[in-house]
Amino acid sequence: MNTSVSVKNLDLNFGSVEVLKNLNIDVQEGEFLVLLGPSGCGKSTLLNCIAGLLDVSGGQIHISGQNVTWKEPKDRAIGMVFQSYALYPQMDVTGNLSFGLKNQRMPKDEIDSRVARAAEILQIEPLLKRKPGQLSGGQRQRVAIGRALVRDVDVFLFDEPLSNLDAKLRSDLRVEIKRLHHRLKNTMIYVTHDQIEAMTLADRIAIMKGGIIQQLDTPQVIYNKPVNLYVADFIGSPSMNFFNGTLEAGSAPTFVVNKEKIPVKTYDFIEKPTGSSKVILGVRPEHIVIGDDAKKMPFSTTAEIEIVEPTGADTLAWTKIGDQPVTFRCDSEIDLKVGQKLPVGFDPARSSMFDEASGDRI
Image 1 (tube, helix red, strand yellow):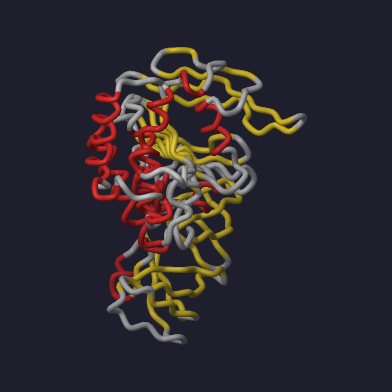
Image 2: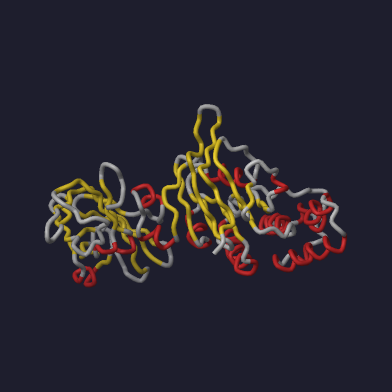
């Protein structure tokens, strides 16, 4: 597979402040890559560098094999969709879609063809004569996507395009964007702070912190095998349960948290452990089972329910294991009561372990 976008040794400084630090990333042709992280992590800055909206301090950017590091945005063969719709209020939808093409002095027949194609793909054909003030938020964002679509480019850049929409619209438009990618098969780079958007849309996710990519992999790998504590804590809602304790190596490795001893010989260690070390054991809420099923797990204990939070499809509950707080998720049909004592357990093979000092996966 060919590389569509290549970022090599990229640095970006604002004065003495380092925003991006020796960043390297290759996006494959037709790939949907999501840049994920909290505000200030550098994800939108990286996207703006790729788009040519910011001058880099060092490194190179290649798009479709061409070095575009110092090229203007219009010369980079990219289409960009911003968080704000940025539509011209005095123009109807057709005018907004065709404005950029007219400025390029494109023939009218070609403009009409591209506008019609974008409108058909995005299902906005009935809206072409309306002005932005007559459109809903979701319709406006479709028009904004259409304005990028008519450029007929290989690479689309999305900068938090759904963050101004309500939850229902975001969910609907997320499906539309995924359907759009499946249909067009263009390279798409998408910035978001919403992990649900990232997990559902991405072929691969790049999780960023402080201008550095912490992990770049498929959603499944990132979720099940986070490379460090930061990624483990950032991905998942509610987040992963963490137990501070001691790993006792040997023929039957054991994790000790307070008085609880958890056998971890089924865990997939990166390197075989030796001696005794301070580690953090992480378990996803949905990997903790309760009742009779818990007794079949490699580790189980009895715990008391402290808080119950029904969420509709499932129920979240809070308890403690070894005096450390634990959240677990179960089917909503299970009737849990505060103060109820019941068996809880999990298989350490589905857990993650991190070195307490470095935070790296072990």
